[in-house]
Structure formats: structure tokens, C-alpha cells
Length: 385
Image (cartoon, rainbow, N blue to C red):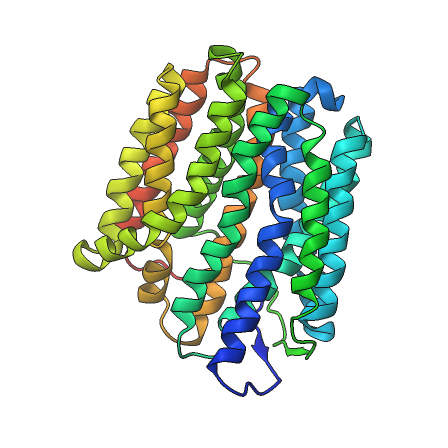
């Protein structure tokens, strides 16, 4: 369902206050996020160590996104009513317990509640970063860019470190350290403002997905779902002794690429047009996905990471062009929901299909659908939010 927009009700004294609050919110999420991204790395590759099958691992990795889609409205109301400091403090403490559970618990039914809790925690923390970064119009873009950098820094450090630790001591011990990092985030969360936020009444209208919805769904399905799980699963088969290190480095590169290359993608869109760049980069991504499934694993994985980072800034200007006026924020939120749906379905499909179907078939079909979805975005100029 579309995510509501927020506007802070407490007056802001000056830009430094807004900058400080945005920075603290980003640090809070950046310290809490590594437990989740490291699980994406280690769970498919060490599924037996966690007492689950690969299919169950896919369900567990998807659960946090699925519960976020279903429970977003409740989290939004809780956040708006209670403010950033109480909400984020609860979220980071719960995130620490989730990471501790990854280190100690085994089996699908023991891990599933942890994934559901984390999904709600991330929803709250992500809302805080977005609301505080846009609390004042002046400098909002700069704050959002810096916020992305702070958030990505935690995964960039945690992923290769976790890969090395897992190769040496197994997949479990690293989560104890990540639980402690989440507790450190309490210090940043306690510096956040406690003022409530105004929330408009949510709309409950259901609309048929348009071309932008379909592309967002396929991007989440392929790049945030099938690709990430396949990187761990196929990499372990091709390089069983060092696959976890290679996968960890590439996943960390994905976050580093967001910091470095997303501004480049934005400038390219301004020069050649966002829709044209979306089609071109999606077609290149489709070719890279085919190569990934055909066995050119590490080269194509690196190429996909670069192309994904270049694509990230393209959707907002397309949506803003097609949906001017007050519907813009709601339209942007709808695209995010469709991407979450795709990213939630991706690990489930990967867990079910990778053990039984040729990887070239899996990634070839998904690449073709992604390319068609991108082409539809170009031709459907009159798409409505």
C-alpha cells in the first residue's frame, strides 16, 4: 500500500539542527542494518548451519520485506504518534536481539519471528531517515545524499569482514558483533528529536499496476532478489573455498557503488533523459543477467552492481515528470512498495528454482521480462501514478 508522507510538526531552529538530526538517524540505521545484509550473504551459502533448506532460506530472506509491506501502515502510525527518539530506540534494541538470534537459534520457525521483527524495525528506521532528511526543503538533496553514504558505510565494512570471519570460524560468531553494533546505535537514537509527526489520512484506493510499477517490481525481483541469492548459491558451487569472500566483497561493492555512482547516473539522466537511460541501462543489465546465469559469474556480477547503482536515481525524475503536483510523493512511495514486493518474491523464487532449474534459464527469462518492462516504460508516456 502507498506509504504516507510525513511532515515534522516541531519547528526547526536552523539548518544545523536538521543536518544533525538527519545524520544521527542515518548513523542509527547504518549501525543496525549490517545484521540483515550479512544474513543475505551467509544464509544461502550456509543454510545447513542455520538448520534450514535453501528454499526456507529464501522465505526467511523475503519475510522482512513482506511483513514491511503488510505492516507499513501500523509502523507509520506508531512512528508519527511517538516521534523519532522512542521509535528508533525500540527498533535498534529489537534489531540487536534479532542479530543475537541469528547467532544462536536454528530452524525455520525459530528464525522466522526474527525476520518479521526486523522488517518492522527497518520500516521505522527508514521512515526516520527520510522524514528527518526532508524536514526542511533547503539542502534536502544534500542531506539525502549524505544520509545514503552513512547508511551504506555499515554494510560496506560488515560484509567483507563477515565473509572472512565465516571462512575462519563459521557463519554464526559475526552476528554477536553485529548485535553489539546495533546496541551502540542506541547512543545515536537517543539524540534524535522526540516530537510527533503529522500524518495525512492514508488512501486505500487500489490501482492496476502501470509500466513503472512493473519495472520497479522486476528490478526488485531480479537485482535485489534473484541476483543476491544466486550470487551466494552459484558462487559456492564455482569457488567453494573462497566463494563467501568473493560474494561478500561484491555485495559490499554494491553499497559502495551507490555512494560513488548514483550521482553519476543522475547527471547522465539530466544530459540524455531519464527514460532513455532507464531503457539503455536495463537492456545492459539484462545482458549481464544472462551472462551471470551462463557462468560468467564474477565479471557479470560486478557489471550488475555498477549498472544497478547507475539506475537508482532514474525513477524519481520519471515519476516527477509523469506525476506533477501533490501526487508526486504518493507515486514515489507506490514505486517503492512494488519494488519491495519484487524483492520479497525474488529470494523465494531463487530458493525454489536454483536447486532444480538451469541458472541460464532462470536468469535468461527474468532478464527478458526486465527488458520488456523497461521498454514499456519508454513507450507508456502517459502512465499515471
